[in-house]
Image (cartoon, rainbow, N blue to C red; front, side, top):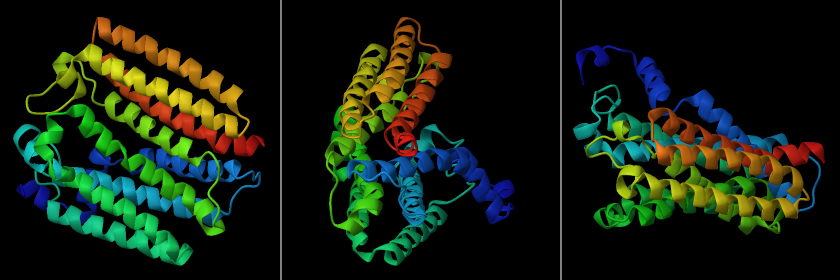
Length: 308
């Protein structure tokens, strides 16, 4: 560890790490919307129109926040060699934090998750454990890392399946204690898969000057046109599933119109990037991907629950 980093107190180093790799306030807002909407949608799908208990929201948020942090930590281990060779400015290779420290942080997160579930509903440990197992398989790249890296679509699909697992856990905070699975839940889990693809592909479509040797991106693996086509395909698939889920809760018109307009803006940006890819358009694609997911969850959970 470089001397200047080593002299910094641990809380300072962790604060710098989160600002670079896991901004807690920005991520917390998105995860809060994600968790709250999942809980509200679960209730709406079951025909309930009263807000679930505050504890349900709190448990769903805490579990998802810890899971997303665990995903970030798992990526640090998985990408350690690549970062050391090609991205030395990142916190781990430059010595700001060590993998050992992140491993201990991850273990603490898992312990907090388990403790919260035990206090809330111990039987939910089943779903939490299944999510942990899938996350662990992801971190090992399903023990076929070379095969997956040669097939970007299979790599992405296998990793995006963690999103339905997380959504299942979040919604289960509402429906699991009742013992009754709400109708339409499978459509919502399918939506979370495609929303994950929107985010994943959107953040790795780069302009030519943003590409780095040895660093994977979908624009370098497939070319800009194919990567943008896949991104728009994920948006279109998500939009169809949003309409299906919205029909279950009688909110198809508002969700369809607002997200349809956003989809058109995404299409326009993709066409611009296909003609002349620039860093500005690449950043806009990433921002639009985040806005799409944020808006879709709000319009399927919190907003219709409050209005109804």
